[in-house]
Length: 58
Image (cartoon, rainbow, N blue to C red; front, side, top):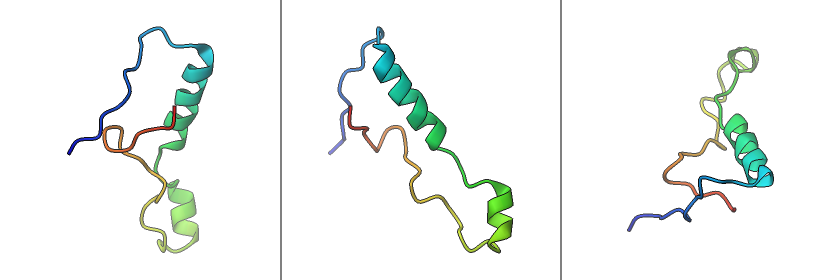
């Protein structure tokens, strides 16, 4: 069964747009400097989300 996203309108309010922008910025890899500092113990960022599989609480 597929997860369906709520219909996102093309005209978004600024509040929703700001929320989506923040989530987009948070969804990135671990910086290489931090990865090297802890000796490659942290392999991946557990809070990453896939745009299709994970739905945001809008």
